Image 1: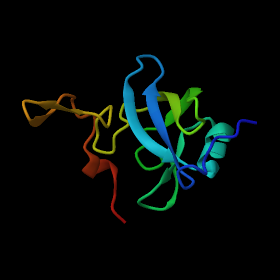
Image 2 (image 1 turned 90 degrees about the horizontal axis):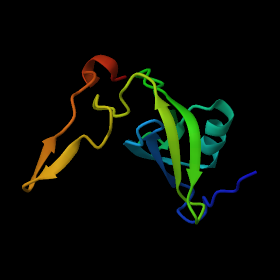
Image 3 (image 1 turned 135 degrees about the vertical axis):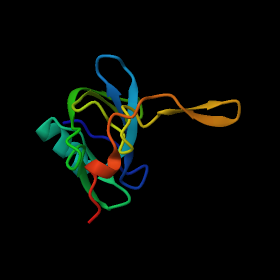
Length: 126
């Protein structure tokens, strides 16, 4: 079994989600040992939500799930890349394909992607 180094960063390590066909970076989140094991077991990207302090299976609210096709682990065993099939087209909670939908141009942030869905119609505040 692979032993990732969760101790180095207080139990959380970065997990980069990347489109498995295009290599486009979709998002960065964090995993702990529990979410790592759930990802391996289910084949669906599962992260640790720092804001909600709980496991977060990508797409549980929006339906935009991530099926893990390949996992890369860095040399220090403290960062992973999930190469995923992004179901639904949008990885970003703001409705874009990638969380990196803005680009710095002439000192300003410019939106460089088309919004796929309206987050107000997808996420219902409880």
